Length: 259
Length: 259
DNA sequence: CGTTGTGTTGATATTAATCAACAAGTGTGG
DNA sequence: CCACACTTGTTGATTAATATCAACACAACG
Image 1 (tube, rainbow over the protein chains, first blue to last red):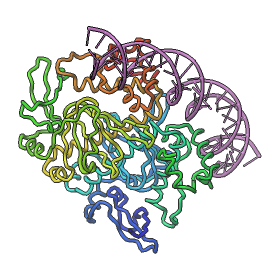
Image 2 (cartoon, chains in turn purple, blue, red, cyan):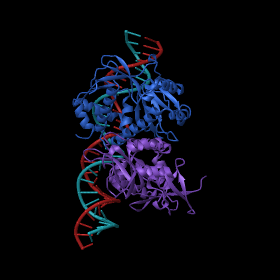
Image 3 (cartoon, chains in turn green, brown, blue, purple):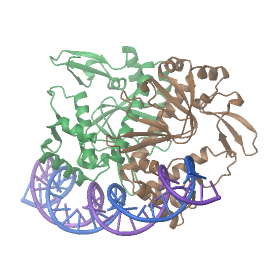
Image 4 (cartoon, rainbow over the protein chains, first blue to last red):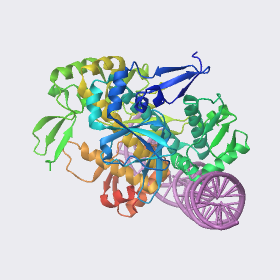
């Protein structure tokens, strides 16, 4: 067993550029708080980070602002270094499907359709690094770690997409909400806040309508389902943006369709 | 404008191994039937094909047979050189979501989850090429065309997955069926049979329950929706496995939610 | 202290699922 | 060649789940 570690975003003060998250390069801290660098995808030399930083344009996007349609969208892709963004597709009449949430280290723009029929919007204040696709292409040649990571990310996204198709096509509202909570718990345990003890709590940076549009439900159904789970003692809702998973095992069974 | 060309699978008689489809290497024929080789992803030398063929195990899978769980599944991936396969995920109680159909040149196993929680099954008789992931990894180094194609395929699959999420989460039954028909038309126009004139006909190798499990509907709803489209003159159904799109423009509007 | 955005709950409507029957092929054996 | 079973497809009646419409609660904010 590995010792319990907590990750946090790298800070500029540490001489790590925000784009380091693109390489899965984040600082891990053990419980006794002695920070050390941890590299998710193989050795990354400082000069590589500098090279990457030289083509990365780092921007802060305010909550609610859209950012994937800046400039020629098919010519860029993005990594998230701070905060959470939502990716979505729209129908002409306004119906929306959120295809995913992107957090620390996640790539946006891997799925490069010529029409770019999806958009991204900041949920909280988000810091992104923008890369020119053309520049990156040349860079990838001397950057094997990043190329591997691109494939790995694409693969992970495909797995997640297939899981989400199962959810949207075949799960009940109750199962969808349970699945969502379990998935958020996994995210929370992967990136806990620095001082957070290992609990069963999840923070929901997105509002209810985002959850609904992610799960293919209406906001009312999401609400009712959460309320029912609360009544049944499976969860507690101390605030609208925070949910405690009181019985994670039961929720997990629900999520996988075993109940 | 390019002249109208038709593609067909390469045949062994032409000295092209089936695995050539993995590189998008298919023969195009113009309408006057003078065959010529066409390479989708850059120049491929014969020695490269030989090298690829040396690690590809070509198998024929009979209709209805499963093939992704042979051996240690996470250790292989597959390309389809003949026929159509379906990829799906299951819930413990048997509910099924078909995540996609794979035809000529498509990869299976790009989404490599450690648990491999999805399966593949032949719809008609399918010819597949199986590759050891380990062998391929070493091969990819001297095989830039294939590495590019892997990324390209993963990217395309992600785009398709996002489109499918929109369909499953937000479209009505009618819109889903129309979307499916339009998508099959695109497939048919991309790979028409050798002698097929450019019509608005689509062949459906999959049965109704497969369509239903792909669209997140029941078989009855698929049937009723098709019948209604027929009554309205949008389609004709000469046989259960063949559908004529009489008014493709109207169907396309339906599919995109414009009606 | 009202205004606005967000969340929750209730009543009703609607879509698609379920349950049921039957039709149309398809293959098998007599 | 026909009778039969068996699979697949179609249609109808009813039910159930979720959407829609509506009202209200609550907190943040100027």
